[in-house]
Amino acid sequence: MASILAVDDSPSMRKMVSFTLTGAGHRVVEAVDGVDAFEKAQAQSFDLVLTDQNMPRLDGLGLTRQLREHPRFRNVPILMLTTESSELMKQAGRAAGATGWLVKPFDPVRLLEVIKKVVG
Image 1 (cartoon, rainbow, N blue to C red):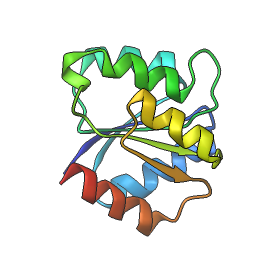
Image 2: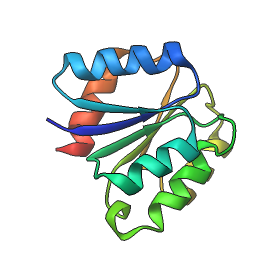
Image 3: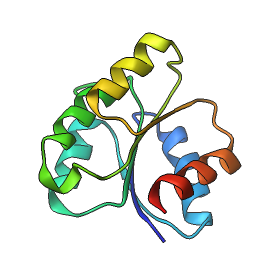
Image 4: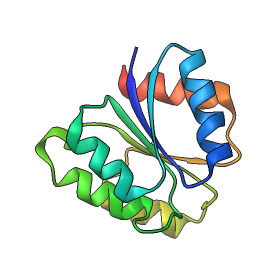
């Protein structure tokens, strides 16, 4: 199964995401914001990054841009899982290098389907 970096400043959201993903057999590493996630991404490889947009220190778009600058993360799928649903934000996400966009609250079955599609 996939090794996934789950990034969200909300402890309850991290727990829900982690519970859903580990229940499906994935290995999950949690990060509390973009800075924490970027540090963890430097230390190990991931098959997928699942990140919130609105976080302190470094938001999801900033994290996506930083990860895309690293050769190891050029082709790693990055999914935004956020309350943001405007077309403008989605365009900004694509421009930053996000692979896909899911809106909270998330449907666990749909989340797993999308992950299966992008990770292969």
